[in-house]
Length: 351
Image (cartoon, rainbow, N blue to C red):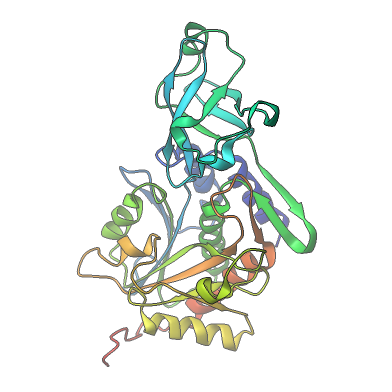
């Protein structure tokens, strides 16, 4: 991965993007793609849509959501302790004892999620969001209310680290890696004159309502949609592979199979993988995907979709873990898929 691209990925991870407040990360994304995108559009919900060859009739939409799970300030007690509600599928058990950042309108306030010491009985077995409290060092409600407001977002005080074997660790890799991947794909095809229009979309709100993907696809009216998200790696202790399947870090991106997925798009992806010696893995999504693909396919007259996912360990934990090798392979798979397309592909499974 080139230095400029790696720096962009790092900056994406460092930039807070709680679901519902993605403005700063979208500004960063626009700044990166503006030098190679042929056209950039935004919408009223906060999506950014960058395209190459937007006038071509066959439109390929790549969607990577930029938002991350978080908490929101819900209540402040008389002693200045802050209570929160969930914004997305965040696990309250993992918050105990962690440092956090409260994102206010004017500044970032540091805090720690309180936890009862083992000497005093330890934490309860069952932890819900309403049980969490944040200690910012304030001594009263009046003091902290001068700084923090109801509805302010709260994220873990974590950025990123590199580990052995090109392993990358960070907060909210789900799915800032996806929004990075779609931008990189657009960059690499921008000077190749593909036979199709390519739309790279940094979508919002996936972690809470998936509205961003619906707005974007309704506007673009793509011929096909490919969601670029993360999925569960199953290569660490305690995972039942007979139930969860077998997906391993470093073994390539994951293609989904199931009712929501277009077998015709998967065939195009699989051929590109084979022709370019790119490893791929598989997962099952029999009913729905739980990603932007579910909303994209239901727009307009219906859009055939595929899901290409990055293997991820410890999803929705304060530190998620993935492989830079898989990121590179996913980018290359999508680039080669797009360059292989004629713009005349028949996506009807009965023909």
